[in-house]
Length: 319
Image 1 (cartoon, rainbow, N blue to C red):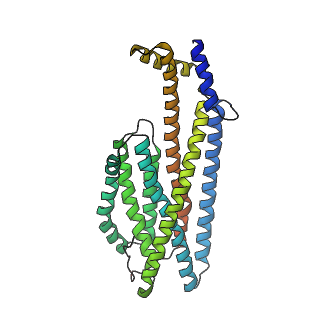
Image 2 (cartoon, rainbow, N blue to C red):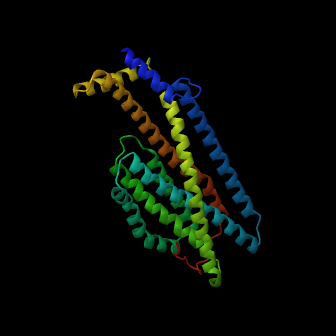
Image 3 (cartoon, rainbow, N blue to C red):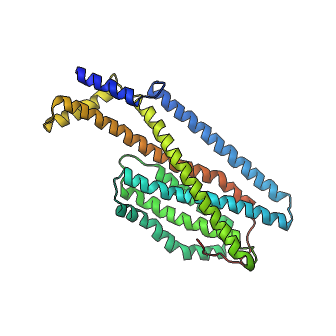
């Protein structure tokens, strides 16, 4: 390795290294410890909510208390749906625009399958809501949405638009399967004179959850991107054989194209830095999808608190 390359390595390491450098393995261990804590936290939260839902229903509340519990649970679930729905709508276009380099028109076409699926599924789910318990459909919709979130979380630098087709289709179906049953649960037992006000409150909680969710997920995305970059650059050192091999390959490729050796070495390091940025961004988007999935998992047990709604009021299609 030439002196110029070594100096360039030193400069890049100073620019991107974390405040307290350590080995890349330690960063992986920190990530694994964080994942274990997150999993334990999710399991504990779901268990508490499930136990609370079973206990509350086993006590035989009065009708007024049941209606209040339903309203509170629906408000929370509506806010969660807002976070998950608008969070995915926020993350997918940004990923397509920044990672896949899609134009706005291409981003719109990428989201089109989800919209078509929702439009086709709306009347079908409306018939199912009448025939089956909306709470069961809400649970199935939650599982369907979790499936789409898991599919979105399998992102990699090689992910293309075709890889996002089926996750978008599943997300479109899950949106309808959660939205209609929850809306019927929220409005089914409401007197007709109060349906308009109740529908407005239902939509308000969803919009409010979406606004808060987008703000939180934006911050989360930035934090995770910085974290993943700090972990990845711990392994990008002048003494790492794989790093040296990658830089030498970049340098040779640029030199073949007529670039001077010194310029080729600096551009090779720039390409390596870009690869680190790309990988950290992809991992951060995957974490964002998983975060929305974690929120959905912790809120699913709240369905146990809901009563089966009366069909009198009927769902309102307000947005």
